[in-house]
Image 1: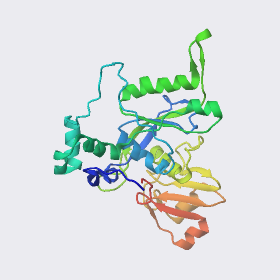
Image 2: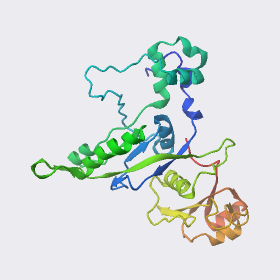
Image 3: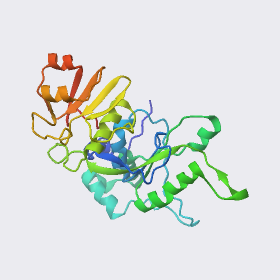
Image 4: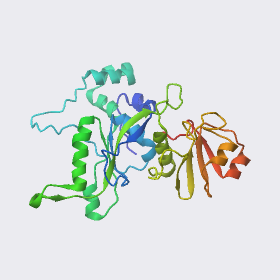
Length: 297
């Protein structure tokens, strides 16, 4: 199979693995329409956003539209690809190293593009035309543009706009508006103290089930929800009201007996487990230790 190669590729091909993982934090006030439609608008740096999306959508994206910043309303404007900006030079020096000093401009841009990529394009009109069920993910770096331009435009496409003879009907659907939350891990590899239970719960449930947290999940119970007969639990941040090893984030006999009941298989995420395999089997529990078994790649 043909492959694309360029000077500096080896220095950036695994760069995304060094990028810190951030949780997504959704804002219902800016989200529009059916938030469970599976569409996302993410405000944040492209590379950080794509890394945040990786556990949810790896291997599932069928089409990516790259949208360069040409929409300036200035007919004579030309996108500057000389790669001379201080930001890009600093990035190349840090990631590519000394080799980056002699790269041609196209090699430099490929070094920048390889770990960044960009986003899928909105497909609302296609779904409305043929009854399809395509999803879109949009990423916008600038907060003001994301909230005041991108979100507004998609909202109008979903709900319609204009009055009277000039009214344009909406296409239906909806999207969740998300920002990049706290970095999941601190410098020692532990869960960051800034990570809230609700954020981690949403991440755990989605990576286990492929869907968002059920609406009835109120953040006050370790039971996040039930999907296809499997119950998903999270012991984190003293959700049971007791941070001691024998009563909070660690799975013990006492904690297992106090978990909200479920008759089928149960998956429990926690900091540690004091139960042997026979005891876990008797409770119908498959234990996953955080942070080591959190899916981030």
